[in-house]
Image: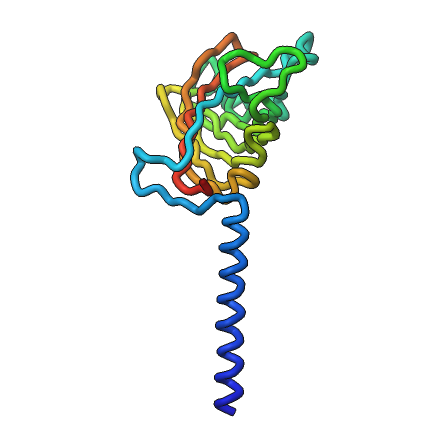
Length: 202
């Protein structure tokens, strides 16, 4: 009996070892290795991108709009702040993301698309919470990055968490520092996103 147990244990250990070799071979197939940064100043990958949100105005911008409100603000949005904080309003978006500040011209593909939602979640001041996926499909990058976090609009900078990814960004984690770059009325804003990945394949 002990011999059978020992043999079974040896086979399990061998199977785990072979699986490890296979995983290592797969990771090495495209020359990339898993990297975890040891310092906040030394991310394994970084990029600066610009997020453009064009909110549907309910009238004449349907051809250009890239986001739309799914709910209206509640009456609570004006209880504390008479100017309104849009509290309770949910917006769904499919926004272009570019490497430069300009919107893509006709026929030009953006660097990525941001697909997800944000909702206004404070009665006292205008603030939102975001959850979205950056979808990359270009010759430079293919895959996704998932971001989420609070957009505290009174702050000059705020951080979203990068909580995972696929493709070129498989299992990536890090921080995206957000800055409001431009606001034009209620229907357009541009965010600068400085993305630093601290766990990624390189």
